[in-house]
Length: 296
Ligand SMILES: Cc1cc2nc3c(=O)[nH]c(=O)nc-3n(C[C@H](O)[C@H](O)[C@H](O)COP(=O)(O)OP(=O)(O)OC[C@H]3O[C@@H](n4cnc5c(N)ncnc54)[C@H](O)[C@@H]3O)c2cc1C
Image 1 (tube, rainbow, N blue to C red):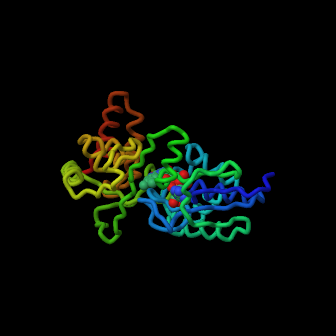
Image 2: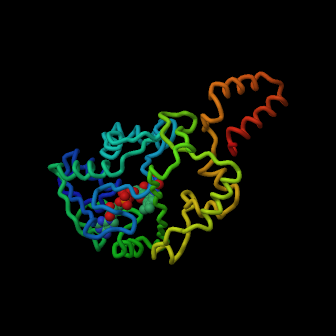
Image 3: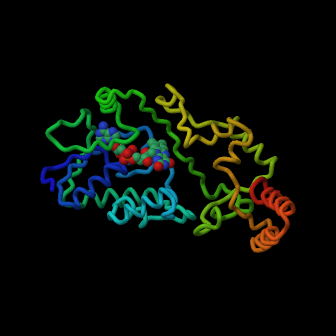
């Protein structure tokens, strides 16, 4: 058992969980967070564990990597996952949270823990050898400390691109056009889906490419390298006419009620599966054309 105080620098998701676990094992913790005294280019508040991008923690199902990790963390009584469960919002098969309630609750829990002392300042130096320290300053580690980590590790290629999700006001959405559904009908119908025919899709793509773009932050202008696993939509659109519809906008697993009764569709598929191979394939293709590509 460690009886000496442990210093945790950075109260993001990693630092908050580390501080919580240590304190629950009876270890005194000093949790250092620079916000709101000094912010990062992506955070907006001084709350702990502020989610700067998607409010989703990924798939809920334990047969997916994210779901399995959540399950394991629940066994460890994880503060992050328990708080996420408490402030979950409908998200089909995913665990997504009300980000504001989530981070306020995290801040409260950590601030009220008798073994956690909160300090709000920017850590400028690498930790001293005398203390056990967890550095959890994340992808937006403040410059001063970041340079020192780079010098210490000899790695100078840390890069960050802000891919924060845009927020769309609900009352600007035409509810006559969109329909609510979750992919493959998993969980509640929690997402608003925008069906597009070919013309709408092409217009949408042109608007994305030619329309007003988000201003790049200074650190992004220096080297606009993209994180390939999480590209801004306008960059995906730029890469090719089909790139969006085979990527994040793929319309598989979604059924627009305006196409008719879903049950009818299942009957059609059932009939198709009893056909000889070539007919079955033809029907399947037709089904995909309607179900998985453009809608009319
Ligand atoms: C814009 C953006 C979009 C992202 N999108 C996703 C996504 O969709 N899905 C996903 O899984 N991940 C995403 N990430 C990665 C995301 O940051 C991590 O999943 C998660 O937040 C990392 O947790 P962390 O605790 O390591 O870092 P953070 O949550 O960033 O926490 C680090 C904390 O350290 C503090 N800090 C930094 N430097 C200092 C210092 N010198 N002294 C004191 N405190 C300091 C910061 O203020 C911050 O509170 C995104 C990140 C960003 C920035």
